[in-house]
Image 1 (cartoon, helix red, strand yellow):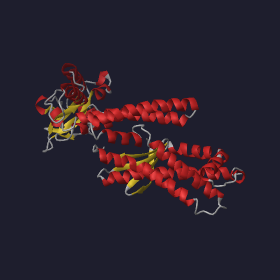
Image 2: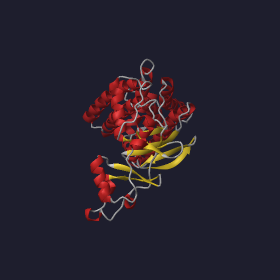
Image 3: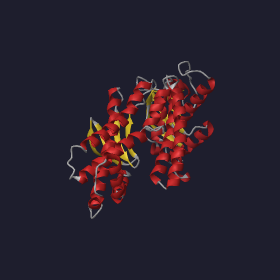
Image 4: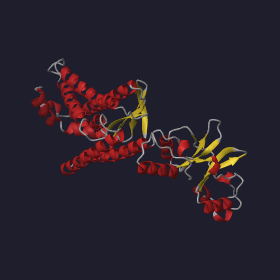
Length: 388
C-alpha cells in the first residue's frame, strides 16, 4: 500500500494509505445524505429526542457527516492501538498502523503462536471499540439537550463503535473474530492446523458476505469479502510454511560451497550464457579474489544485445546490491527475504563473512515438499545439501 505518516502513538507510526483519502469523503457524504434516517434510528435506539429538520437542512448535514466520519476513523485508530499495546506487552513490536479503504491494519513484526497471546491480542481491538461505544453513550447524558449536533455525533459513534466491535468478532479470518477462533482452536491442536480450519471458516464467511453484498448492492461489503478471502488464503499458506520450516536452518537446505557454481566478474556474457546452458542454472554468485562481489542472473545477461555479448563481461551487468543471509538463520527467513525482494536465490554467509553456499527458491520448495511428504515433524527433520 502507498501510504504516508501522519503521526505516532506509543512509538508506533500511524500512516494513511492513499485509498483512505477516497473512503473518508465517501463516508462523510453517505452520513450527510442520511442524517434524517440516522436521526430516526438514534431516537428509536437511544431515545435522544433529536429533531431532524434543523440537522438535515443547509450545510449542517455535511458538517455532521465530516465530524462523524472523522470520529469513526479515530475510533478505528484506537481499535488498532488496542491490538498494538497488547501485542507489545507480549513482546511483539508493531511496525505501523495504517488506515486504508477497509479500515485499519496493525502490522506485527512476528506472529504469536501461543494461543492465549493471540487471543488477548485479537480481542483487545473489539474491547476498545466497545469501551468507545459505552463512553460515547455515557457522554450523551452529559451534553445538554439543546446541543443536538453534538448529541447526534455522539449517538452515531456510540452505535457504530458497537457495530464495529460486533462485525470484527465475526469469524472472518483474518479479522479479529477469525483470530479469536484460531486461538481457541490452537488450544487443542497444532497452530498450523488451527490456522487452516480458521481460514476455511473465514473463506466461507467471505463467500456469504460477498453474496449478501452483491444482492444488496453494497460495494464496500463485496470489497471486504474479497479482502477476507485473499487474506485467509494467504495467511493459511504462510502458517503452513512457518510450521514446516520450524527448526529448519538455512544451512540444512542450502547448496554448500563445495557444490556451488560461481563465475568471475571478467567472464564474458557469451561465456556465461554457455555456462548457464550446460549447467542448467540461471543465477550465479560472482566471486573475485575469494570474495562475493555481486550476483548475475539470466535476465541480466539477456539485457545485453546478442552482437555485444562477447564484448561485455559479467562485471558490466551484474548486481552489486546483493542480499545475503547467515547460514544459521531460519529457512523461513530466507523464504521471506526471497519473496519480499522478488529474487530467486540468496548467497549464504558463514560466521567469518565468507560465502558458505547459496539457497534458492527451488531449494526451499524441495525441502518443503520432502518434509511434508516424509510425514516427519519439523523437530526431527533436517534436509542436507540439496543442489539448486
